[in-house]
Length: 401
Image (tube, rainbow, N blue to C red; front, side, top):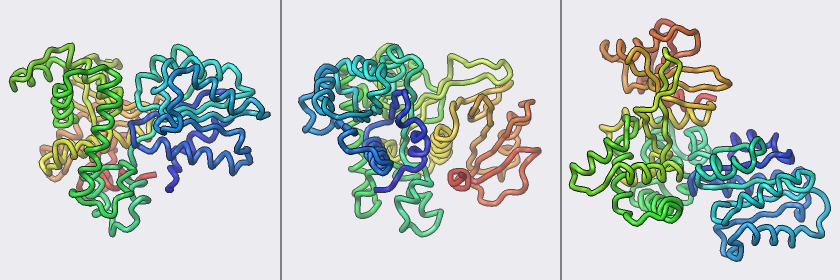
């Protein structure tokens, strides 16, 4: 079992503190393994096994827990005679009806309970829990493997380029490590099965979707248009042109399901000069390129879009917020903020063409503040930057600390 050190370091300061820890991420991204690593960490710190209670809602052993009251009774029964603080871990808590009621109750008894929960639906934490636990919970998103983590999982790959090519093709779902070899014949069926599980459990069942064929069409179209501005109207118009019956409201509902399941992340657009977030031209990025490639194939002609997707997901790991941007109608691929301080990024396959170089630098040079600006490309050799703009290759960027 390989430790997800990055996430362990982020959550450790909050263990035992009076705040509910919410671990989010799409199914099969490694949340359950991460929880077991947290439990092992507590035991290594001297916490007695009786003071740690783990509920795994994907295990038949906990099939008797259906409602918040069932969960409350189980925890009370298991810990009634245990003194001291009880560390509760509930995995995939969204499968419990009205779960937020018992979590809110526990959070009001911080001297007795320390609570960590996981979930595969982003809306449940931004809406349901937030209304009950204002200021008393903190979210820890878990993403598919970064390239640095991918290297830890696959030390047998010889050289950075081989590692990068496999990462680009198969993505970073941790379960791939169970396969004897990374190749299309085994990896793609495995990834398709994960994708089907996510669609069924976290979108179709939760949203009560009847037209699964339409959901599949919208999902594939969105995968096919990562890094392109999308609206429900444009998706609806395309599908109607393909003789697929739909309407804008259905597209909105299904698209929100894809985002809530965390198969996709939506990047809002930001006007740098006007200093305001825009309500149009959002972009959608795949949580994992392996899942995307399992649905629509891996095409070398998509390299620019795949690059942009990789950078977006890496920025989400490193920064608090990530937007797409514009200034004077010129595009800035990403504005990444940490502690309210921005870092501007452009992503391009190559800078060898003078017209491409001018296009990629003009928007960054038009930004008048002194915050960092970076261009990321596939080129391996760079000079000392361009007019104060850092230039870095994509693999070097992904391997940065």
